[in-house]
Image (cartoon, rainbow, N blue to C red; front, side):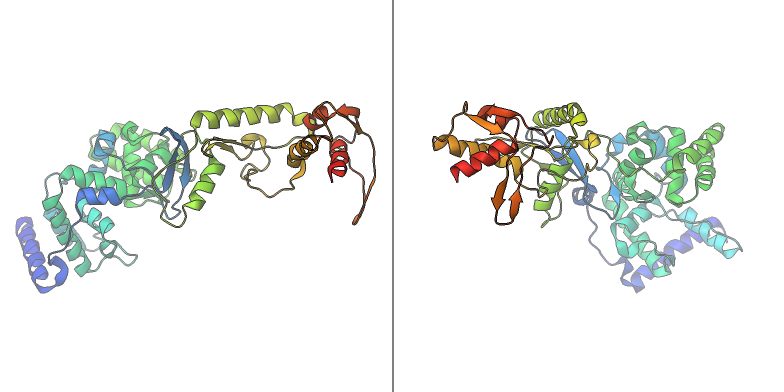
Length: 421
């Protein structure tokens, strides 16, 4: 049987199968616009009150997906490599590559035949409909027919550019990296528009076996380059594959400045009743947040030799109550950077002192210039003897209320508490 006769027979077989089964029954094919609108990044981007990015937070742990990447933002080298690897006649066929199907049928008729015939459009059909996706046991004949029928429907309503764009955004690459955006930034630390021929060949090689060993990926990348007439770049691609894939993919696909990790956690916790949005505008002011962070770090650095290990700060708009800045820790200077000291439970301690002195001044017991004695004292309480001390275990003697409050001295505060109560 000639190849043309075999292709004709396969088309007839698919048509007959469609008549005998619900596989080719009219089905709702989503539009490209619907698929793109339903797409969600695995991260939520927080914006400040002016629309400036302040934080990116991972909100979907099932897979890592970046923002949707338009085809115009994908390098021509990667587009060409993906087509060369997965579907060389992508631009010519109408969803099913009958020549490849015939070749696969002939290959399986002989011992050791392994050639596949899944087109990019058929793969996209499987990505859009989980029932058509490849399972561990492979696809049944009926599933393959359904997938081919779905691919034919897609080609009738989508353009080739739309099919390629959606496939590149939905296809798994390596590990948890799904889509060209997450893959490019995680593996190559660059946007998809910047991938060169060797990097693109490596990415295309991952499509067949996302978790293959680096050496295997390197050999397949070489095959992709040879299919493009770039055999001279094989050595570079193989070496680069070993280097890039030797370590696990980076957990972060976004290299943007991260300004408000603790605030982001609080905001997303409040919004946890619904699916996290892709973009969330907040009351923060990026400039104020950055200044508050820098001031806190400067103060911590200056006080390091005085056993001050961490701090936090919040800036509020008194008129509206909006949070303009929220710094939960000293960041790299902190031994517990993930702990949000803004909301962490703690004793009220010195935060009560301004109110204590305010009460004493309001009741006319003291003025800001009144003198208090910062000297050892003992107080009998229901729970036992209380001996107040300062953090430096020193005493300053006679000090004004102004100095006692500014230095956060404990003994004068205790004497004032006794006075007003």
